[in-house]
Image (cartoon, rainbow, N blue to C red; front, side, top):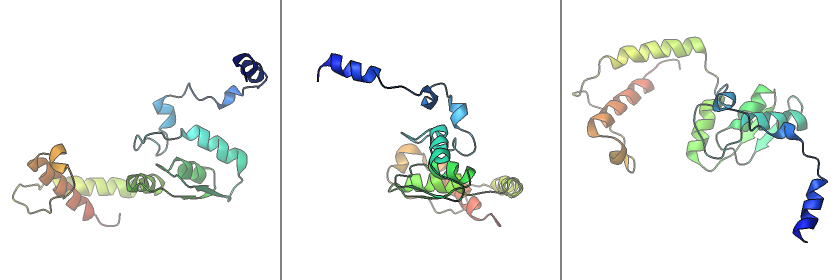
Length: 161
């Protein structure tokens, strides 16, 4: 097929520009929990929302076999659909869980105040379990690792959260 034939065929295709979201800014796409993490190659939520709305009805099950950071699960929940997401990447699974877990703002505020109070008692003499991860020494100095371990410990001690 020649270039001219291809152009002729393509010229007959009606383009629906309502599917273009080129005008959307980061702020437009980071609503609800979508701005928690900048995940590579993620769908913008407006596309997912439109597809879920167009092809499903309330209480339908939406399955995302390549769940990524959970955009489909969040939008499905917003639109009253049940959803299941699967991903091989444990970081993606963690991000998704954070994005779809409902948290009471009152409990969050109380936990934040409790955490701030606990962090006031940091001392380099307090024993903490230092994280063991590949390349952590590349990213953090020893004292930073201690402080992060202390913060993690105090977060883990929060009650009712």
